[in-house]
Length: 236
Ligand SMILES: NC(=O)c1ccc[n+]([C@@H]2O[C@H](COP(=O)([O-])OP(=O)(O)OC[C@H]3O[C@@H](n4cnc5c(N)ncnc54)[C@H](O)[C@@H]3O)[C@@H](O)[C@H]2O)c1
Image (cartoon, rainbow, N blue to C red; front, side, top):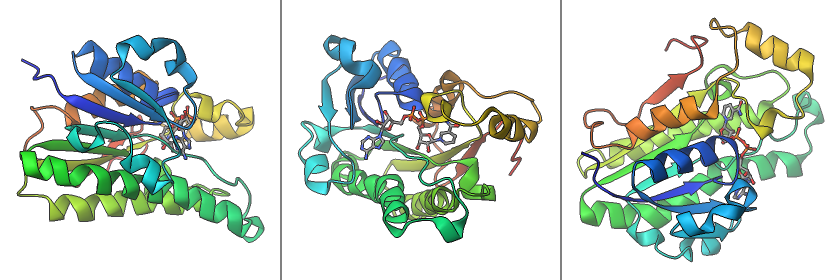
């Protein structure tokens, strides 16, 4: 039986985050949706506990999300692909913005939610990393480095919290069919798919299914791990 929980999803307006919102609502949980822009959540406010249009890089705005201190489950899907150029051409401001969203955004939410979870003795945190953080994608140095940081941050915090009842995971998707890839050149997409043994892109619902299990009561003896969802590309 699923115990109803209060869930916070960042990046909820699109792609993987939106698929996670759907899954948690279907399971009977109450969901706080956080995104820079409402996106696909715009017409669904009636189904949500709250829809907060904030930038996760703004720590004060994150702390001010109504009910954030009471959330039991957090999925951090807000992210940006950042500059897609050789490392020598990356503008410092683009490097910093990529880290601000993909890493500091996650840090800001962790600081806001962990004390309440620890006090209640139960919590599940799932941070969306990327295959790029394990393997490094060419011309995506800021993105790859930031996702490597998400994987390491997750491991560190998981060990800090290992005896508290709060479990922390990351997941590493390969290419998933979401708006993030809408502008990716077809030949780049073909190259990325060619590296996937299942020879296809993943669907956001497939990522949400893994996230849903990691966030559930059934997941009890696993924390800190980076869970693969790459169609066989990364078997470690
Ligand atoms: N799509 C893929 O192929 C893929 C693969 C591996 C990892 N990922 C990761 O999965 C996560 C979700 O990606 P997606 O494909 O669903 O992308 P998406 O672009 O469809 O959705 C990302 C959402 O994050 C929001 N967002 C961006 N910056 C934000 C900020 N500063 N504050 C609040 N919200 C912000 C956007 O508005 C958007 O709604 C990202 O972290 C991404 O890096 C995606």
